[in-house]
Length: 68
Image (cartoon, rainbow, N blue to C red; front, top):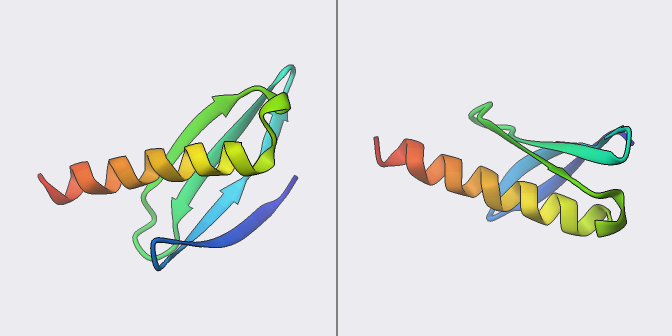
């Protein structure tokens, strides 16, 4: 499905949606730091929902790293 840029919270986030059997893997990568987080969901969730969930996880990971 390819890589798509998005401005999540003022930062550029790259997404790559990959169908694996009956699931879709969605890594979200912060373009500035290179930090990534991935989710796996059902294709029926839709691309926007999958990307939104991956973005939320990435934001969580970035906050955890900032607190270290």
